[in-house]
Length: 87
Image (cartoon, rainbow, N blue to C red; front, side, top):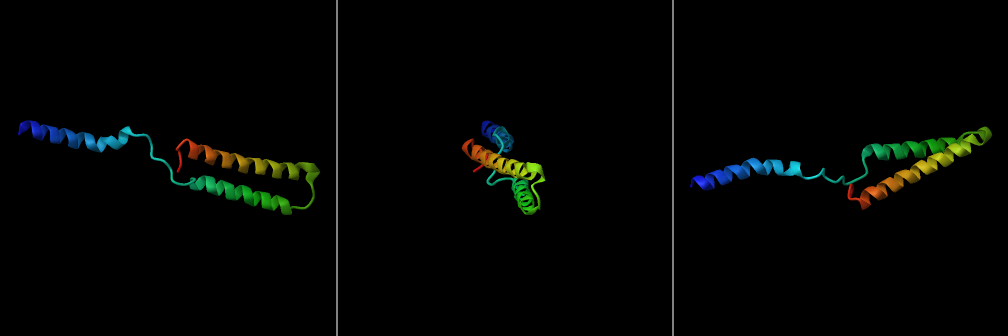
């Protein structure tokens, strides 16, 4: 009886700690901050697209940089899914 009691006590002590031994849980979706960043970039691209003048080619260059940032975020999401950081 004493052995069974000690075994049960040991299991009760170790069981709550089991989740701490695992790596962090996977995210299900893209974090809200990343989604907000995408929306901000798309809004900035839209604003620049409607802005007047070419600004010496810098407006077009800025739009290209925004497109590249959006592509990078897409690649980051793809990487997270492939490496099981996100479902």
